[in-house]
Every structure is written in structure tokens, then in C-alpha cells.
Length: 227
Image (cartoon, rainbow, N blue to C red; front, side, top):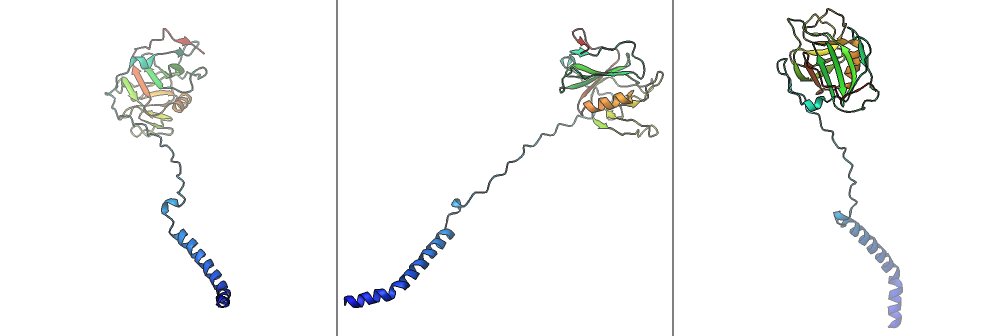
């Protein structure tokens, strides 16, 4: 009897080994197929770039809709040192010593026929201007820059060139490059020397404020002169 059992075990041994191996493979395959989804490698989250908020577009204004201005925004910390008389066609530009960034405000005094540009309260540029003739006066008040065009031509006055134009109103008042000579006027725009217009164009952005007065001067009593 013992010999019979030994013979059966001997003849069945290889078959049992093969069966056990196949059973092991089946178990591994079953285990892999039935693995819960939670055990699968989770996808790596890609970083999302933070979106930059779009600046609000300035409200369109006509020439008779000048804004009120906060006097504190016009506090002058430094003015340029300008030697000698300031004649038509003259301008000064000096950013040395001024902050590289900060709010930009442009002031225009029609009576003095001058324009000044300030950054963070420091005057960085000034120029003699042309302004509107009697029948087409330049507006008074504060106006944000609405749009900028480096190469622009008038749609109203014979396609006249208006280089480095910065629009202030929805009825066609701009600051732009002009041939600034004594005795000339504009149709309401503020004309500045072309080279100055290019420099001014480079430091402003839509929304920056332009304050136009007729003889009202800024308080510069506490301002430093020069660098």
C-alpha cells in the first residue's frame, strides 16, 4: 500500500508543480487586475500660473468733463534745475535721482505755456508747449490718458501727423509731438517738441493723469531743486 502511494506521488509531482506555478501566475494577474484605483499612481498636478489682473480701462471723457484731483497726489518733491529762459522748442529731461517706478502725473499750465511730468513727485521732464487757439481752446481739468499711438494721423485735420499721440478725451484732444514755434496754436491739443513727445510716451501708460490749468501753479515751496 505504501509503495502504491509513493508511486502515485512520484507520477503526480511534476503536474502538481506546474499547476502550482500556473496558480501563482493567475493569482498575480488577478491581484493586478483587481487592484483598487486608489492604489494607482496619482497624476502629478501641474502648477497653474497666477493670472495678472487686467487694469481697469479709464472712463471716456469729453473736454468738458475734467476730473477732480486729490491735492495730495500733486505733492512735488523735486523740480528740475533749468537755467536761462525757456523758449518755444526747448525742453529738459533728467530722470537721474528720481524713483524708477511710481505714479506718473503730467501737469500743463496754459498761461505759462509749459508741461511738466512727475514720477512719484519728482519732475523728470519739462517742455514749452503749443495749445488750443481761441476758437478751439484746450480743455481745463484733469484727464486720464485714454489711449496711446506712436504713429498717428489726424482724422479731422487733413491727415496731419501727430507722432507719439496720447489721447485725453473722446472728442479728440491729445498730447502729441509738434513743431513748437512761437505764434503757432493747435485745435485744442497740447503740442510738445517731437523728441520730448517720444520720451514722454515712454514713461506713461493709459490711466495716468494729465492736469491742465490756466495759471494755477503747483506748490513747489518744499521741493528740492535739481538732483
